[in-house]
Length: 318
Image (tube, rainbow, N blue to C red):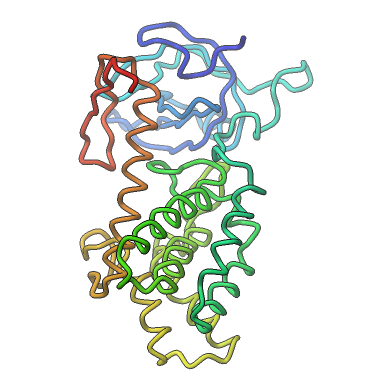
């Protein structure tokens, strides 16, 4: 069986085909440019630096390219890294890999399964205004919603990650609404469904994921607020209606704190729940992803999104 990136142990030499997920040009202390790569295959992604890159190499080794890499897996500052000793483009004319999809991580559920479960949950939104807005926006972005990642790097950063993250949150939200009957189920489910759809505008897609100009200058929270405004205009819904204002608040407050990018803090029960459900699903995904690449009895790599903490993987399975 062909070894994947994370099948190689630390300090083991490696030779394999990889997808260049990102290729950022940076300047070293000596003033010479180098390429900061993020490589990827179905086992995960890992960084590597290509020093003293020529202009031709910078153009050649671009995001979305498939390359044959020779090097060694190392650890740098607690993070896995590739020491590159050789790099060239794949040669499809010689039968070498050429399909980008063969190197992409995908959601652990098929699109059809996620779509069916999500559609069944839509029937639980009984508020007519919220239901119309949600249907309008989901219909507008349906194709991309099931293809986009939920982030460039940290959590659910794989094809279909956006819809899978949303579906995971919907399951949690439904359980919380069952436990606490005071929760406005329509508002909570609508907020979960819409909270991250702005990432379709914020990010470039599953291949070579980068932030778009709007993503950098505005961010997905503001972009989603705009999308709700557009939907109301097209559906002839009064934007001052309380249902619209409540729904917008859930989107605007879902990061929880101003320093985390939300322009307002949660001031509704459902907004507070949405924030914690979002944080829980993202955190669990980051931890489990790191532990999948960790041997029992060892600590994981540092997780940037969780204050650079490392997590221990016990020997016990249950």
